[in-house]
Length: 383
Image (cartoon, rainbow, N blue to C red; front, side, top):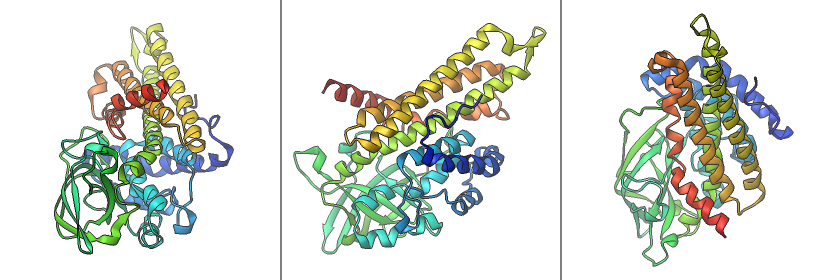
C-alpha cells in the first residue's frame, strides 16, 4: 500500500517529491523521536535540508530558491510531514513570509532579505497572531506609528514560528484608524535585533515539539521607514491573498500526519496477536482501517484538486478552506483510530502513534481555525 503515491502529482513535480522522500527517510525519520522527546530544534537536520535544496523552495531562482510552484511545495510538504511534523515544520518554516515579501516588497528589500533563506545564512518568521486575537485578521491590535523616518511598534504577538532565532520577522501591524476594518493594517520587516524587540519560547507544546514558536513583545521597537512592505493600509489584503497558499500547506501537513497514522496502525495490528490470531484479522479492525484509508484518499484528492484551483484561479478560497478542513480533521481521525487500535500501548511515548496523536491537533488551529474555514466555504458557496 502506497499512501502518498504519485498519481495525483503533476509529472513536473514528481522528482521533487522523490527527493523529499529520500531526504525524509535519511535525515528526518532517524531523528524524529529524539527531537520530540527533548523539544530541541533540529539544527543539523535543517542544515542538511539547506544542502538538499529543500529550504525556501518557493523563493524564485533570482534570489537563490527553486521557484517552486504551490503543487511542488505540497509534494515536498506531505513527504516531510509524514516523516515527522515537528521537523517538517522546522524545515518548511524557515521561509515564513517570504512569499508575501517577494510579491510586494521593493527590489532593495528582496535583494536584502531573500537570498539568505535558501542559502541557509538566515531565516525568518511571520508575526500575525496575538495573545487575545487568533483568527480575526482584522482585529489585531499591535500598532506601528510613523515617527519621522522610523516605524515605532508596540504590542504583542503569539504563536510566532522562529520568533526568537529568526533574523527578521515580517510583522502585521495596525497603522490606520478607518471605518474599513480591512484597510487598517500594514506589514513591516522587523529585525529581531532591533531595540525594543523581545521574544521568549512558548511553554511546552503537546505536539510538533521540534519546531519553534515564540511570544514576542514590541516595546517602543523602532525600525526604518523603508521596512514597510507594500502599500500602507493594505496588510489585510496582502496576507489574505496568501492564506489560500497557507491553507494548502496546512492541508499537506494533515495528509502527512494521516498517512503516518495509517501506516503505524496497519503495522501494529498485523504484528499484535489477541485470542490466538493477529488483531488485523478481526473484521471490526479491518473496517477501521478501511475507513481510515477512505477518509485519507478523499482528503488527498480534495487537497490536490484545491492546489490546482488555487494556482489557476484567484477566487479559490473555498477550495483551500475545504482542503485545509478535510485534511487536518482526517489527520485527527486517523490518529485517534490508530491510538484506539494500539490499545494500552498507544499512550506510551515509545510508540509513534502517541506522537502523531498530539501532532495532529496543531494543524486544526493554524492558518485559521476550521470553524473559520467553514465560514469561508459557506459564504463562497452562497455567493
